[in-house]
Length: 234
Image (tube, rainbow, N blue to C red):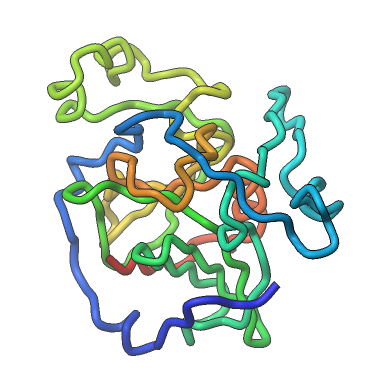
């Protein structure tokens, strides 16, 4: 699979600071949970648009006692499939670079390549940008909406920190994994996380965080080095 939309090193170095107050982020969805999807054209050599590689990549996964359903990847634009590409960022190996305009996340590898993942991002007004560190990571995390989100959506009060948050599970907004972004030693409240809503990949629907398909966040989680540097371009 080939790289698309190359990004210049200059473009990634042209941003800094926080794009929006981190307290606004909560990593939940906004908008319809099942937007209209148009099936993609069949892939060459596979009349139904599939392949054995993709069947394995996005098939059903049993993880920590949870059965993650297979993703109907034929209904997702193939540009958002997980794939190894020529690194367009110029950053050091081990760095995560999120290109929010293109809806891609890159994990830079040695030797000039990068693993690229399709992502969903925060809707306008709730996105974060800047540089930070993946200070903490969690398998099947709890989800605790911030007070500001609860004020906007009172029905989420049952998941407040006082009530212990939302337990892990297939419908938890943080999905199978969460990577927590810190900046200057402080939690930004901004996450890279899984999501059961595969149809949100490539869209701007969340409350600020970067979401990946659960199968992809598991793959990313296993590849990311400790204390990885992360750059988010808005």
